[in-house]
Amino acid sequence: MEGEAVALEMDPERRRKLAELARWHDEWQARHGVDDAEHTPEGADPEHARPPSPEAEREYWARAAEIMGGEPWPPPPEQELERKKRAREFLGLDPETGERKD
Image (tube, rainbow, N blue to C red; front, side, top):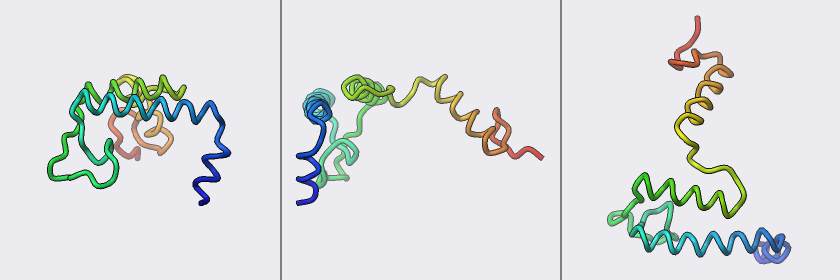
């Protein structure tokens, strides 16, 4: 019951976006023949999973970000590399290699 109450209180625009995302998910899944634990409801057969290709994965997350109003995921390779370098620096590691600085 608690989940229902939260859904009733959800912002109507967010609810609309989630419904659009669900429709996009179904369309994308059918078009690419995807059947894996990340993109299918519980109960999918893991032995016969058909994970998405890297291109299909990028397409999915780009459209999901467009619908929901966020940044595309995964980020472009150059942005991901920059994020890794900053994280390494923050942790006191060499930003290029990830090795400990002594």
